[in-house]
Image (tube, rainbow, N blue to C red):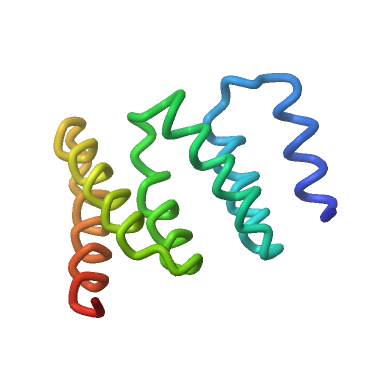
Length: 106
């Protein structure tokens, strides 16, 4: 386990509602090729804080890495819907581009 991951997990023990910590742990796990652990943390955010728009792009990219393009498209679409509601035009643009690029590859 990396020192960074250990630090983030200790921080999470102090505040188990902090979506950013779940996100940071997911990204760290992904960088360590622990895709299952990363997915678990992204799913936690999606379940408990579905308005955390930044998670959807990275969840979709993780699904792509895992060879799950249909799940990636679904994550991008869900993120697009959240970004429209907020509104967050930067996230909306990134999610739309990711979805379009994946659709063109399929």
